[in-house]
Length: 494
Image 1 (cartoon, rainbow, N blue to C red):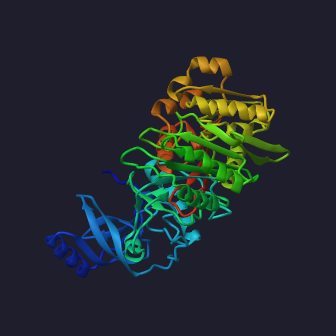
Image 2: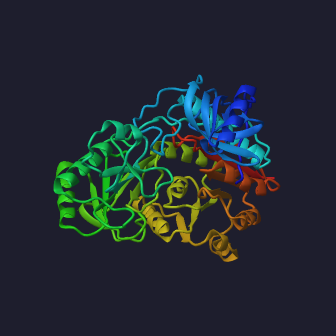
Image 3: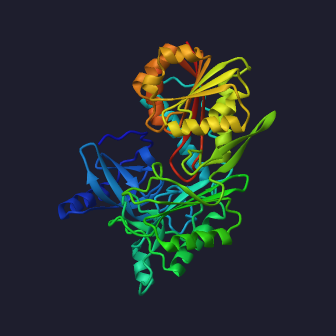
């Protein structure tokens, strides 16, 4: 299993700790005491050294001294979990969420936000320089999120008839009479759901709606979903909000039940601010809704979000239950402003927007250039993009659907013309090498690469470095309290 990522400031563990480790290995479990944690690796894991071996540590911060449980040992690395923090490091702060350490989200909430930004910035630089072998200009300071809590506009909660309990809960709850859960899956366990009391990711009315649904389902005697048996009642609750104050609730049931309608009616009556109340029945063995029929119980079948656009009316975006839309809308606006600035538009350019999704970047650029051609593999996203263009009265955009490897052929260029600027915002996996090769052939004078994964971005840019020079790099924090970081890179033709 290959590992990538920076190794910063390693200090070898003491000989006393090494001795304890060797004794532990002889007994079986490897319990190692008082190990200095010295840096960050990939995927938000901290780093230490033990017997000259790099150890990837879950649950620690650089600067901590911790007792570790080594659960995996390979020739080139080991993996460990924290058993106890012996001495907290200077950047450690109390976690604000009661579910911290159990829930799979917000894994960095025990670290000062300024330090989170520092490590994210370093992650971008290390990936581009070390993985991509790229020459960088001075990297701009990372754009901090204006809100570090309640910044998400979308959350999905899972229902389960068999709640997962922590050891502390089992010790303190006494006789357990209610085993239902409406919350999040335990990381790595599809069949284990922890009940959420309060989530700090989405603004109200998210928490109030979820707790009401949980209580009302209990009052109605509506069963919860039996995950392993793939049967039964309340399965998922999707809540979407907008900066304009609209709210969508989509409840997925595992099967038809007369109590389903009673639950929906109770939500409608209790929350008049819910502008889109939807439902579906999902009999499949997975929670995805892309291939399901969604029904409107009350209000509209969509939300409308707005995004400011200097010198113009705000852009409006129609968001349906299946639509992709950035989950941190304020930072989305900041990142797109960087993208537009890097594109260097003067009003006369033809822009290609690859992996355009529902057309958010395309429409954000369209009023500032001659035309935008968006390309996207998901036909439903292209349909959303066309609706959004019509909603805003923007006519200088076109959208095409297809696999990017095959779509960007000579016929595409013949239909649309060659680009003056090419913007690409691929998924986490980055771009297929055939797409990168096609971008090289297109030879647009300027490229703007927007990425949610600097590692795959670095790989792709490494394939472009003979043709393009990097002039600007701007990291963006879209997801506070996680190790994820977005990055925007501007390139010019050599």
